[in-house]
Image (tube, rainbow, N blue to C red; front, side, top):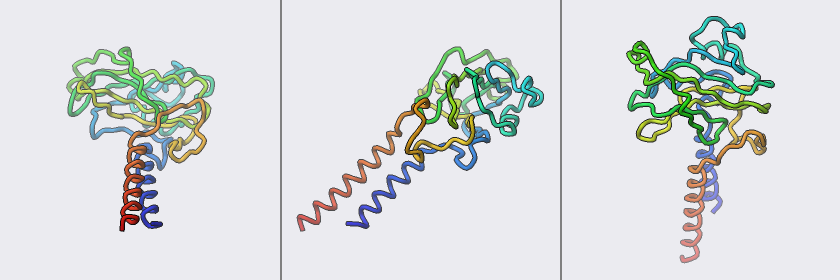
Length: 207
């Protein structure tokens, strides 16, 4: 009985771990999903001020500049992720963002026209993804996402502001100002584990 319970607990813990962020070892760095998305993260804006005007260097390669200059949003109201992207297996229908592990938010205004050079490099569109950050004080995970024409949602840029973010699965008291949604897969796996455990107990009683 104890062994079965331990196995069920391990299964649930593994599911929680699997729901964590893409780069849990150091989320102050920038993760790029170059396997599924052709992309270029060109410019980072803090409250409308470009990374060039923040003193981080010339335009282009914003992921490297952001990695070298972790951001505290302070009193800023927005951050903006500017560049271009294209799905390697499909076509981008919408751009959006996710805060921590919440639901993605899409906006048609995030997509901008792409010139031939971008299209030839694999981009479906340019993008300027504006993420509201007003009032965020705790370490917060920012994820840029694309939705394909088939409805698939793919994360493609990810970084932390206000310090290193820790997945809510590991945080018993997540900040109230950063609401997120529970991972349905964790609930499903937990339910399966409980059903399996109940079946074992019933079988033992029948014997």
